[in-house]
Image (cartoon, rainbow, N blue to C red):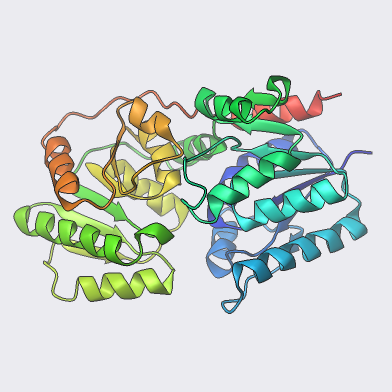
Amino acid sequence: MKKIAIIYGTRPEFLKVLPIIFEAKKRNLNFITINTGQHSNLLNELENLFDFKPDYNLKVQDVKSSNSELLSNIILRINDILKKENFTQIISQGDTLTVYGASIVSFLEKIPFYHIEAGLRTSNINEPFPEEYNRRATTLATKLHFTPTLNSKNNLINEGILEKNIFITGNTIIDMLHYVLKKEKIKIEKKNYVLITAHRRENIGENLEKIGCAIKELASENPNIIFYWLMHPNPNVRLQVKNLFENSTQNIKFLEPLNYIENVKLMSKVNLIITDSGGIQEEAPSLNKKVIILREETERPEVVECNCGVLVGSDINKIKKNFYKEIKDENINLFSNPFGNGDSAIKILDIIENEN
């Protein structure tokens, strides 16, 4: 008898597999859920927000752990549950060490692995680190690849993956976004707010300093606009941001991490988003928000192609130039989201259930 293990370990992964879990429950499928605990406290809070409790919480994260230690712990703990539960299939999403570790177990134990959000690529295996390596390596162990877009499908074909094993399904985060917008009756508006997030490893240090300088200048030049900087749990990021804005203007507001529902409510109201987040890039078109992307390249080029996003890296002049270009536009943009329309989970489970 088939038994699915749905494995996640970070907040973004949970949000992107939750529509799969909802749909699997509707279909009365035989499945278990495993939270590796790669993100601990904040992920548990997110689970509580949606009144969800996984079958297993592995609590693998230790602040002292290196990436290698974390990966080995993930592999060992998933394998322990495999011996107990005898699951026959693994579904996992994205590009973290949780996903990579789960794919290693599936390959070595000859269990079919189904990869959600497959095929995302940059041209540099070190950027983002270690996610770009994780997703490329995960591809090798994957039986069926569920890509969000045609671009990601073509990335896999160019790497020699058989087209018959690749399915364009959209991105499950759009399922989740639609669910929250409807449940919370959230209205999309355009107020005098700007949302900022910056946390990626490649931006910590000199790049974050330049980003901070640009935001300080923009805030000083635009006292009528409120700049909401959403803080990240990473202590290195928090310390640098705190030092950068010791004497900041009053219209820069620093927010502690918001739960997903509150985050969607804020994004739905802002005029503009400045971010290095991949997830926000996916959600922004559905919220009709333009995104200034604080990266040199993105594994989600569709955002740029649909004119919803622009790449600026950490260049102060580019950040400011694109800010003024977008902030003057008072009309609400209408974007067609290249990552789907909210039915990805249905498509994915249809394919898995009908598989020979």
